[in-house]
Amino acid sequence: MLKIISANLNGIRSASTKGFFEWVGQQDADYVSVQEVKAQDADLTDAMRAPTYRGNVRYQGYFHFAEKKGYSGTGVYARQKPDQVITGFGVSEFDEEGRYTELVYPKLSVVSVYLPSGSSSEERQQAKFRFLKAFLPHLQALRASGREVVICGDWNIAHTEKDLKNWKGNLKNSGFLPEERAWMTQLLGGQMDWVDVYRSLYPEASDEGYTWWSNRGQAWAKNVGWRIDYQIVTPGIGAMARSASIFKDQRFSDHAPLTVEYAWPI
Image 1 (cartoon, rainbow, N blue to C red):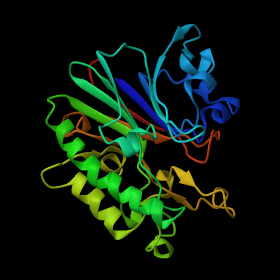
Image 2: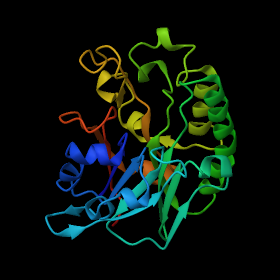
Image 3: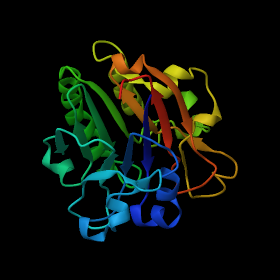
């Protein structure tokens, strides 16, 4: 089985102090995809660059840091060395923000992506729309690569009413705007035909699927959450997905890690 974890850390240094890497070391995952690293290379300890699992075997981390300090950033930890590491998807506005890391193997690509949030201002919402427009051709190229692709990340979009608690109150808010949801529908249907693994395995609405909770009010305590962290995959490996789970027993950030297991030959 191929086991892949995706987690928005809201700061790798903060998550480290909350036990994230100790937890990772117990999971026996093949890949751990992280977003919102909020650090530069010089900020990382050896344990952050190459955490251990099974006590003494190390992952190797591959990162795309934002030029702006303390902001954004993505990475993927792997047990097997990739043939190629790709950082950025060729759009300077977003590559400067460290939003894309891809590990390439002969038959598989594992990607960590962090889509912009538009919640802070109209300016950032327009940046998010630009990202969606620019990212779509890259997704089409990935589909045409001949490899199976697993894209892990914080997509900052709740796709349907099933994917957030208070959908009626968020119809005009970033993350649940009609344009964002339509973009996700385009991605998951028609000719593109990517697969939202969690929803394919668990098609019914459930508050068990939430992966993010606002720090405002009592969102966590009342489970007023959003499902915005996904593993979006090509159909071949999507058909091999056997289980998906969201870890909530320990809090490493305002997001919860999403783990998927695939019947894929290692």
